[in-house]
Length: 394
Image (tube, rainbow, N blue to C red; front, side, top):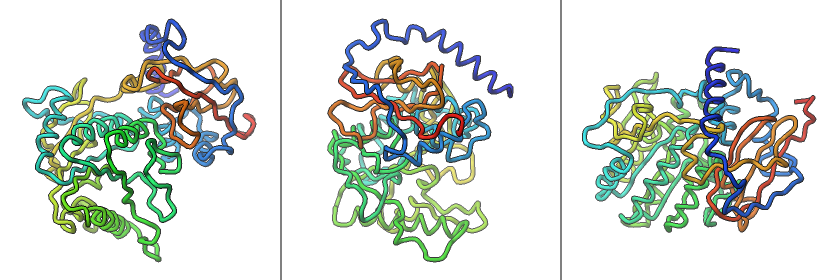
């Protein structure tokens, strides 16, 4: 066993011991849990292709997992398994900005800077659920300032796409949106009155010939900027929060590649004639035990963003990021849902939401693991999704 996995194993065992108090003394206080005892086959769900990736994952050999499998584990609540192999879970040093000591101060700074802005763009690392929690906090602060529109790269953008009008996100709305923190963001946006929009490059906007490298990136960025400009057109003065991944939020041309790349934010700035407030969550990480405002790094292109946010690296208890506490207390997974062999994906939905709603919590577990779910007091429907393949064939 590689040393880093031994260290993670021992750290997890210690966290379990320390977090014994996280377990409910009454198994489910203030929770009405309707448990479906019969597991659902993965092929009978909208996520059959996603769950099929689990059949090829060995949780003891994550360093052999493909990038897609790493993303699947993040979506299914197991950042603890990927933290040792994910660049997004490594410390990236940045000096703290003076005068801002905590997350509230960071949000105050963003709100103050956003007062005169029509467009705010915040990026994320697609493997970090806490980045989505922060976007939720930003959206909450922006709502009183007149921000009423939200656009996400993650939403499916097609003529026949499911409308983004329900009070919850649906399974078919996207890939990253299947992750519970993204679903929580969606519920908050709808509660605050935001109108949701997709802006990803459409099939019709893709070149008939196969592009590669910078040409492919530039085509996608141009399409995203065009789609966002259309959202703004006809909505004079409308204020919009745009949620993108990584470099899409860069405000200037990137000359570091063999061919220049103009990212979405730079193109939107020129095309729509707006000066967006851009927020970077991906460059700085692990500088402190709390979220801080970071000083601009010395990297080339650092001026491409207006604000840098430095989040602490995730800490895991009972195999879940402690940031999940904001969703509710740790609860034990009902024993009848735990797998005896292979994997099971435990899903918890609000009792009044349909099966196509993205769950409030969703996590993949293997036999004999100590894994928790996080649910605020309320009524929920719980079920387990399992593989269609016999364990011997996985």
